[in-house]
Image 1 (cartoon, helix red, strand yellow):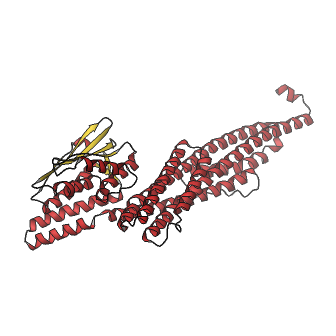
Image 2 (cartoon, one colour):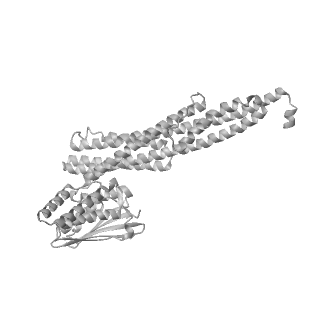
Image 3 (cartoon, rainbow, N blue to C red):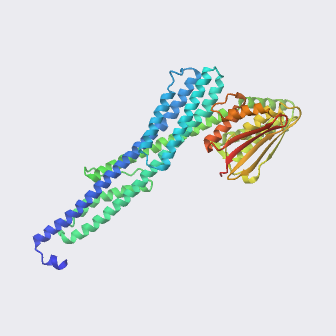
Amino acid sequence: MKRYFHNTSLSTKIRISYLLLVIPLVLLLIVSFYMMQRSSKKYNEMISSAALAGDFSLDFKKDFDYETYLLIVGNNTVEESRLDELIKDADTVVDGLIDITTNSDNLERLKGVKKYLENLRKYKRRIERNLAANVEYDINMEIWENDVQIVTGLIREEIFEYLFYEIRDMQTEKAEMDVFYQRVLTGSMIAFAVLTLMVLAFSIYLPKSFTRPITDLVGVTDRISRGDLTARSHNDSSDEVGVLAHSMNQMIEKINELLSQITKEQIRIREAELELLQSQINPHFLYNTLDTIIWLAEGGDQKKVVEMVKSLSAFFRTSLSRGKDIIMIREELLHATSYLEIQQFRYQDILEYEIDVPEEFHDYMIPKITIQPLIENALYHGIKNKRGGGMIRIGAERAGDDFVITVSDNGIGMTPERLAEVRAVLMSDAPADNTIYGLYNVNERIKLKFGSKYGISLDSVYGEGSTCNILLPAQT
């Protein structure tokens, strides 16, 4: 090759130099254009899905909760209510996201949102049936607070996770683009080095004119990869690299907006969870406890007053649990113990209790306020209806990969007919019997969180007592 160029005329060398310069550049431009078009299309799809999901997460929970409240309080009739429209619009949005989403995990999340929307339809029908039957206002408010708001909150959380993984996919795509541009840069530099030896006249201008915008773009993407979302490309040219830089700047702006929206929504979620937890505290229980404290204080029994206030403080502290919905067994047992201590002050002549949960179960997870409603049910419907003293026992045992918490009492128990009615209500879509709404709510929350396999089951013998089993996954 060296001898060939040595014996070649200057015009031929120039022609060969042009060919060696043009052919690599043409190939490079073709590949670059294809990759930029493909990446730009993929970015547009990702940004569209993220923006659509962001709008959905911002508006749906607020609108649906508010429309449900208007229906319950009578500001809107069933015909005027926009609940069906909101669910239908949400279904349309989710279907649209399913069509453009390629991430398999995100597809599963969207399918989960579809199931939650179906649950909202059930709650809506339940509220409408209650309104038609003139059922007590408090029942519909409990459905709104304990079912509708929880499910809309779960929908919003699923959409937030969808946004997170969509943004992560954007970062992955960006990393692939970094590799591509690095390869392009390396190839360009090699090509320019070779062309420099062959075409000395182009050795200064061409490398700089081609590498400067690419180097600037690589520098910007490198800063973004390290988490600096303030980086911007200052390339204002109208070529492909300039278009890509402009698109990347727009993408960074959109990511910043979405992250800001997510941060604000997380704050709103925490505030809503706090309000929901505060609303779950039974006011009658609080009033009765305060009355007992006043009675003890008037009787001069300061030691019992202090003990009861400590138990009440522990009860409230565990009820709040810093806004968490899932807590450890040890925290739930502390909540149950505080409740039993308070009730034992009031019913000390008829109530005894025993908690025997092995240490190995204390780090497992459980939905908050699960055991206390079962204890309350055992006390008010079992022990108080039986003459003489009563005992409530709380225990736990393994069940394969799961575990079971048992709340049993030796109260009046249930007849076979009543037991069948209670079991039927637990399996239904709506609790027709208000006396066991606490059991139904606990069962529904467990199933909603862990799946239909889990929940509570009842056994009872009239005159001997009742046992409630809580099946949960052994998760730490």
